[in-house]
Amino acid sequence: MDDFGAIDSDLKARFRQKYEQKKRLTNQEQGDWVKSILVPQIDDWSAKRARKASILMATTEAHSKANKVVDAARQFMKKS
Image 1 (cartoon, rainbow, N blue to C red):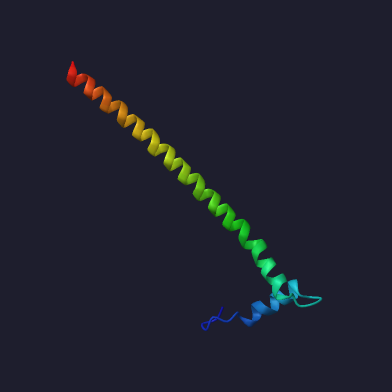
Image 2: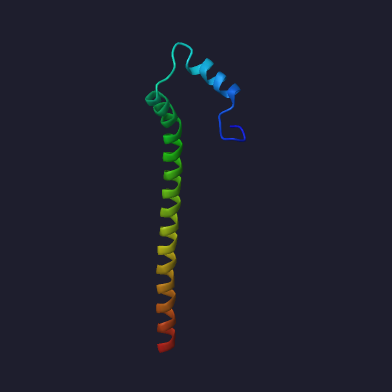
């Protein structure tokens, strides 16, 4: 893109040479083409975030259980 947000004319020409040799792509075809590139990347990113969140939740749960055991041991030691 140039300073004004327009796509550089050289990039347009390279795109047309590679993807629109026979005919121009319709708006729908262009949208589908972009989605085919971006959606897998977004899905992968979302999956990674979900895995990280589940690891964090499991770690937090384990930490909470460990704290309960430590608290119970302290209570038991005070009574003894």
